[in-house]
Image (cartoon, rainbow, N blue to C red):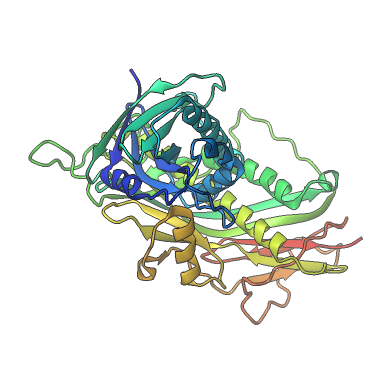
Amino acid sequence: MGRTYIVEETVGQYLSNISLQGKAFVSGLLIGQCSSQKDYVILATRTPPKEEQNESPTHSKAKLDNLDEEWATEHAHQVSRMLPGGLLVLGVFIITALEMGSEFQNTLRRLVFAVEKSVNKKRLWNFTEEEVSERVILHFCSSTKKIFCRTYDIHDPKSSAKPADWKYQNGLSASWLSLECTVYINIHVPLSTTSVSYTLEKNTKNGLARWAKQIENGIYLINGQVKDEDCDLLEGQKKSSRGNTQAANHSFDIRVLTQLLLNSDHRSTAMVQICSGSVNLKGAVKCRAYIHSNKPKVKDAVQAMKRDILNTVADRCEILFEDLLLNEIPEKKDSEKEFHILPHRVFVPIPGSTVMLCDYKFGDESAEEIRDHFLEMLDRMIQIEDLEIAEEINTACISSSMDTEASLDNTDDEQPKQPIKTTIVLKIQQNIGVIAAFAVAALAAGISFHYFSD
C-alpha cells in the first residue's frame, strides 16, 4: 500500500486555476510535512517562468523536453530558505493539457531527484534512517482534471514509482502547533593557513558544522520542562467534548541548553593553529517551527526546531556571501577589519492557517521588495501590513587590537560612534597573520571579518 497525502483544499484550487496560456506545461513544488503514517501538503507554488521563455501552443508534447531542470532546482533551493522548521519540499507537480504518459513520468522522476539534491546540498543536518524517504510526483491534466500521483524513494536512485493516495481536506493546517525559540549564538571560526585555498564560505560552513553538533546534542526544554522524546507533545492538554485535544492556536516555548564541557569519559586535545584570520558570528536569532496536531511526538517537535535553528543560521550566511559577491568593491589594504550584519528574519501568515512562512531582509531592503520576492518565489501576494519583523537591528559595536601581538582580551578600544549600516559590503582578502577580534550584534546575528597583513 502506498503513502497517503492529505492535501489542503486550497492547493487543489490553486492547481485548477493555473492557466497554461499556450505553454506546453507548468511545473512547480509541493510543500508540507512528513509523518510516519501520512504526509501533509499545505502549499503548492509554480516555478516562475524565465523572461525569455515564450512557448507556442503547438507541438506541446515535444516541448516537455524544454523543462529547465537547473532553473527549477534553483527555485526549489530559494523556496527552501523560506520554509520554517517542520516544512519541506515534499515533491514536484506538472500541469499539462494532455493526460499522463511515460514521458511525463520520466521527466518528473528526474526532476524530483534533482530538487531533493538541490534543497539538501548545503544543509547542516542529515535525515535519519527512521524518516520517510519518499517524495511525490503529481501530474494534473488541465483538460480532464485527472490527477496522477506516485512516489519515489529518493535514497535509492534506482527506485521505481509507487502508487499514492491524494486526498483533500479543508483547513488542514488551521490547528497546527507553533514552536518558538530564541537562540543566542557566539561562533568563532578560525581560518587556518592550511585552508587558505578554500573559499571564505567553505571555511565558514566547516566552522558551522562544529557548532551544529552542539545544537544536535543539546537539551530542549518545552515550556520549561524536559520531556521524554517518545511522549505525546500534547500530553496533559485539555480535551474537547469529542475527545480531541484542543490544539488550536497553541504555541510552545522552546529553550536550548548546550553542553559547555565534554563528558568525563571524553578526552579533549588542545591544538594550536597558525591562522590567516577568523570569522565571528554573534547575536540572537528567532526560530520557529510548526507541526501537525495529529498526535505529534516530542521528538518530532524537537527535530523540527533543531532544523530551523541550523537552517536559519546557515541560510543567512549563504545569503550574505551571495550579497558580497554581487556587490564587491576594491580590496582593503594592510591591517583591516570588516563587519557585516546578517539579514534578519521576517514572517508572514498563510491565510486560514497557523503556519507562517519566512524570508530574510537586509536593513536597506524595503517591505515592497520582500512582498515582490514572495510573489516571485511562492506565487503569493502578501499584504505589507502582515509582515512580522522578528528581529530588530541595534547599533553594532566593534573593537579590535590593531597590533598583531596584542592580547585577545584587549577589546576596550575606541568604538564606532555611528551605527554600522547593513550596506557595508567589502571584498574579503585572506592575508597571513594573527587576528584578535570581537563583534557584538544585539537582536540580529552579526558576522565580522578581520584580516591583518604580515
